[in-house]
Image: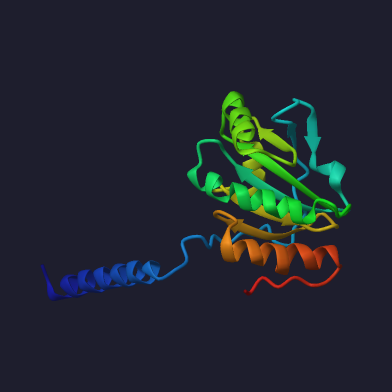
Length: 186
Protein backbone atom coordinates (compact mmCIF):
# COMPACT_ATOMS: atom_id res chain seq x y z
CA UNK A 1 0.00 0.00 0.00
CA UNK A 2 1.42 3.38 -0.94
CA UNK A 3 1.83 6.26 1.47
CA UNK A 4 -0.92 8.19 -0.34
CA UNK A 5 -3.46 5.40 0.28
CA UNK A 6 -2.33 5.04 3.88
CA UNK A 7 -2.79 8.77 4.47
CA UNK A 8 -6.22 8.71 2.81
CA UNK A 9 -7.30 5.75 4.95
CA UNK A 10 -6.11 7.46 8.14
CA UNK A 11 -7.96 10.70 7.20
CA UNK A 12 -11.19 8.79 6.47
CA UNK A 13 -10.97 6.94 9.78
CA UNK A 14 -10.30 10.19 11.66
CA UNK A 15 -13.30 11.80 9.94
CA UNK A 16 -15.57 8.90 10.90
CA UNK A 17 -14.27 8.98 14.48
CA UNK A 18 -14.95 12.76 14.66
CA UNK A 19 -18.54 12.23 13.42
CA UNK A 20 -19.11 9.45 15.94
CA UNK A 21 -17.62 11.52 18.77
CA UNK A 22 -19.81 14.53 17.90
CA UNK A 23 -22.90 12.29 17.90
CA UNK A 24 -22.21 11.22 21.47
CA UNK A 25 -22.89 14.74 22.73
CA UNK A 26 -26.06 15.48 20.77
CA UNK A 27 -29.57 15.33 22.20
CA UNK A 28 -31.02 11.98 21.04
CA UNK A 29 -34.57 13.33 21.49
CA UNK A 30 -33.96 16.25 19.14
CA UNK A 31 -35.18 15.16 15.77
CA UNK A 32 -35.67 18.23 13.59
CA UNK A 33 -38.94 18.45 11.74
CA UNK A 34 -39.69 20.36 8.60
CA UNK A 35 -43.35 20.49 9.64
CA UNK A 36 -43.01 23.36 12.16
CA UNK A 37 -44.89 26.34 10.72
CA UNK A 38 -46.70 24.28 8.09
CA UNK A 39 -50.38 23.40 7.89
CA UNK A 40 -51.21 20.42 10.08
CA UNK A 41 -52.42 17.46 8.04
CA UNK A 42 -56.20 17.22 8.43
CA UNK A 43 -56.41 13.59 9.46
CA UNK A 44 -59.24 11.46 10.76
CA UNK A 45 -59.70 8.10 12.38
CA UNK A 46 -62.14 6.06 14.45
CA UNK A 47 -62.43 6.80 18.17
CA UNK A 48 -60.69 4.05 20.19
CA UNK A 49 -63.64 3.74 22.56
CA UNK A 50 -66.73 4.42 20.42
CA UNK A 51 -65.65 3.86 16.81
CA UNK A 52 -67.10 7.25 15.80
CA UNK A 53 -64.93 9.16 13.34
CA UNK A 54 -62.79 11.92 14.82
CA UNK A 55 -61.48 14.50 12.37
CA UNK A 56 -58.88 17.14 13.09
CA UNK A 57 -60.84 19.38 10.72
CA UNK A 58 -63.64 19.70 13.30
CA UNK A 59 -61.23 21.45 15.71
CA UNK A 60 -60.03 24.24 13.41
CA UNK A 61 -59.77 27.51 15.27
CA UNK A 62 -58.63 25.78 18.47
CA UNK A 63 -55.24 24.99 19.95
CA UNK A 64 -54.85 21.22 19.56
CA UNK A 65 -52.41 18.99 21.39
CA UNK A 66 -51.94 15.75 19.43
CA UNK A 67 -50.26 12.96 21.42
CA UNK A 68 -49.17 9.75 19.64
CA UNK A 69 -49.08 6.71 21.96
CA UNK A 70 -49.40 2.92 22.09
CA UNK A 71 -50.32 0.37 24.76
CA UNK A 72 -47.00 -1.46 24.30
CA UNK A 73 -44.94 1.73 24.78
CA UNK A 74 -43.18 1.99 28.16
CA UNK A 75 -42.52 5.74 27.87
CA UNK A 76 -46.21 6.29 27.06
CA UNK A 77 -47.05 4.74 30.43
CA UNK A 78 -44.43 6.96 32.08
CA UNK A 79 -46.00 10.11 30.62
CA UNK A 80 -49.66 9.09 30.97
CA UNK A 81 -50.34 10.77 34.34
CA UNK A 82 -48.69 13.98 33.13
CA UNK A 83 -50.73 13.93 29.94
CA UNK A 84 -53.94 13.57 31.99
CA UNK A 85 -52.80 16.48 34.21
CA UNK A 86 -52.07 18.56 31.13
CA UNK A 87 -55.58 17.96 29.85
CA UNK A 88 -57.01 18.76 33.28
CA UNK A 89 -55.15 22.08 33.26
CA UNK A 90 -56.62 23.30 29.95
CA UNK A 91 -59.84 21.28 29.48
CA UNK A 92 -62.12 24.14 30.56
CA UNK A 93 -60.74 26.49 27.92
CA UNK A 94 -63.14 26.33 24.96
CA UNK A 95 -60.23 27.04 22.59
CA UNK A 96 -58.24 23.95 23.63
CA UNK A 97 -58.59 20.37 22.43
CA UNK A 98 -56.46 17.37 23.25
CA UNK A 99 -56.44 14.24 21.09
CA UNK A 100 -54.59 10.99 21.47
CA UNK A 101 -53.52 9.07 18.38
CA UNK A 102 -53.17 5.34 19.00
CA UNK A 103 -50.24 4.12 16.89
CA UNK A 104 -49.46 0.58 15.66
CA UNK A 105 -51.69 -1.08 18.23
CA UNK A 106 -54.45 -3.65 18.45
CA UNK A 107 -57.87 -2.24 19.37
CA UNK A 108 -58.44 -4.49 22.42
CA UNK A 109 -54.99 -3.60 23.77
CA UNK A 110 -55.61 0.13 23.28
CA UNK A 111 -59.03 -0.08 24.93
CA UNK A 112 -57.62 -2.04 27.88
CA UNK A 113 -54.82 0.51 28.27
CA UNK A 114 -57.31 3.40 28.45
CA UNK A 115 -59.51 1.45 30.86
CA UNK A 116 -56.56 0.62 33.12
CA UNK A 117 -54.76 3.99 33.06
CA UNK A 118 -57.77 6.25 32.52
CA UNK A 119 -58.57 8.92 29.98
CA UNK A 120 -60.32 12.27 29.93
CA UNK A 121 -60.01 13.11 26.22
CA UNK A 122 -60.73 11.38 22.88
CA UNK A 123 -58.28 9.07 21.11
CA UNK A 124 -58.32 8.18 17.42
CA UNK A 125 -56.82 5.07 15.90
CA UNK A 126 -54.19 5.27 13.20
CA UNK A 127 -55.44 2.20 11.39
CA UNK A 128 -52.85 1.94 8.62
CA UNK A 129 -50.08 4.21 9.92
CA UNK A 130 -50.98 7.03 7.53
CA UNK A 131 -51.52 9.60 10.29
CA UNK A 132 -48.04 8.88 11.66
CA UNK A 133 -46.59 9.16 8.16
CA UNK A 134 -48.38 12.48 7.57
CA UNK A 135 -46.88 13.85 10.79
CA UNK A 136 -43.43 12.32 10.31
CA UNK A 137 -43.68 10.29 13.51
CA UNK A 138 -40.56 8.25 14.30
CA UNK A 139 -41.99 6.41 17.30
CA UNK A 140 -44.03 6.95 20.42
CA UNK A 141 -44.62 8.99 22.40
CA UNK A 142 -44.55 12.07 20.18
CA UNK A 143 -46.50 15.24 20.84
CA UNK A 144 -47.51 18.04 18.49
CA UNK A 145 -49.12 21.40 19.27
CA UNK A 146 -51.24 22.96 16.53
CA UNK A 147 -52.30 26.61 16.71
CA UNK A 148 -55.68 28.21 15.99
CA UNK A 149 -54.75 28.72 12.33
CA UNK A 150 -54.05 25.01 11.91
CA UNK A 151 -50.24 25.36 11.83
CA UNK A 152 -47.92 22.96 13.62
CA UNK A 153 -46.12 25.11 16.17
CA UNK A 154 -44.28 22.55 18.29
CA UNK A 155 -43.14 18.93 18.28
CA UNK A 156 -41.59 16.87 21.05
CA UNK A 157 -40.26 13.32 20.85
CA UNK A 158 -40.40 11.50 24.19
CA UNK A 159 -42.49 11.50 27.33
CA UNK A 160 -44.12 14.78 28.37
CA UNK A 161 -42.93 14.84 32.00
CA UNK A 162 -40.96 17.14 34.30
CA UNK A 163 -39.30 20.02 32.49
CA UNK A 164 -40.99 19.16 29.19
CA UNK A 165 -44.44 19.26 30.85
CA UNK A 166 -43.65 22.78 32.10
CA UNK A 167 -42.31 23.88 28.72
CA UNK A 168 -45.39 22.66 26.85
CA UNK A 169 -47.91 24.04 29.34
CA UNK A 170 -46.29 27.39 30.15
CA UNK A 171 -44.27 28.24 27.05
CA UNK A 172 -46.36 26.73 24.26
CA UNK A 173 -50.05 26.12 25.05
CA UNK A 174 -50.75 28.98 27.50
CA UNK A 175 -49.28 31.66 25.21
CA UNK A 176 -51.08 30.26 22.14
CA UNK A 177 -54.41 30.37 24.00
CA UNK A 178 -53.71 34.02 24.89
CA UNK A 179 -52.65 34.93 21.34
CA UNK A 180 -49.06 35.53 22.47
CA UNK A 181 -45.77 34.34 20.93
CA UNK A 182 -44.43 31.01 22.10
CA UNK A 183 -41.03 30.39 23.67
CA UNK A 184 -39.41 27.12 22.61
CA UNK A 185 -35.97 27.91 24.07
CA UNK A 186 -36.39 26.81 27.71
